[in-house]
Image (cartoon, rainbow over all chains, first blue to last red; front, side, top):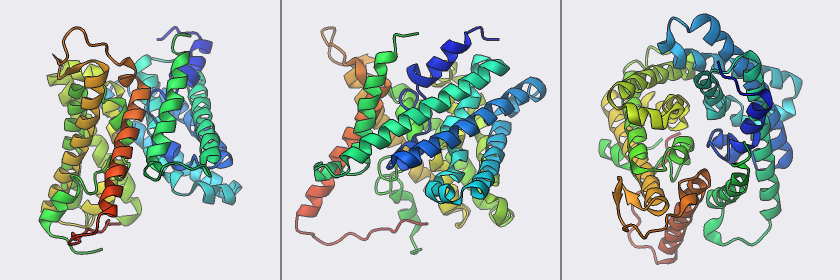
Length: 191
Length: 215
């Protein structure tokens, strides 16, 4: 068991150890769907939802199933994540077809989104309990959303500016991400 | 899809369609564990192992895997080999295993591996899938070691724990921190864009035959 307070877990997951900017998890959507603020925001919210569900199921698996067979952890986690993403995909398709089209390939790709799988692994390694896991998931999800929205708004504002031809595309995105990450380093001493 | 020769299968993944630098796949490990060359090598070795084994297995059984559940089957195969790699590393290189931590498990969600299975192994025979996997694996290793090299030399002043500049070197600490990862890869991409542009500006000589991206 881990005896960190809920607030420090939340704050650490959200800003200090931000999943995207400090731990490099969930980079594919970070590069892919960060062109528009609105899409980024929705992608972030979908992420929070999946993260919380993952945290619940990982806790359940750890407590009741995996005690005796720890070597099955990676396999069972990935199955759980894959089926969760499938469910979310169906729900989103039903509730909001527009959002479904906007997220496109990145919704099924959430299966191979390191942030979600990483959350399950980190939660296990640090021995978080039930409530701590949920708080960790919400914090991490909010952190992802924060990074995505920041990135999207920066990209929207540099869209029409005159960048050198060699920097068009991913190179520029990575440099912006690096600068954002430098800014987030300022939080490092807080906890 | 254009027909390719086995040697093209092998060479293409190394540089021309380098998974990390050109296709931008598998970025998470490329950025997260490349703060030293040693970590980068351990990570590449584990990924290489998983990639080759799963390519061989999947191309062997490609006729038996139903189309509807192929992605989940691939993931299961990959997860099995990642578990193996995790255990092997834990047994024989405990220090490295501890340094890499959760990122060994995260090889499962490396899009590069799944991408190769979907794009190549599920359509080609065992021998060529293995060649392709080795090529892509070498390309991945090159990219990771390059990143690790830059970051370790600038950020710590060492290469493979051997001090390069003597005691007076003031390390550029931010290179080994997360921000350094983004910036290093960003600058590598900018440099590649620059060379690409210069190549285009020159009058084209005999156009080398390009291999089409298999999709």
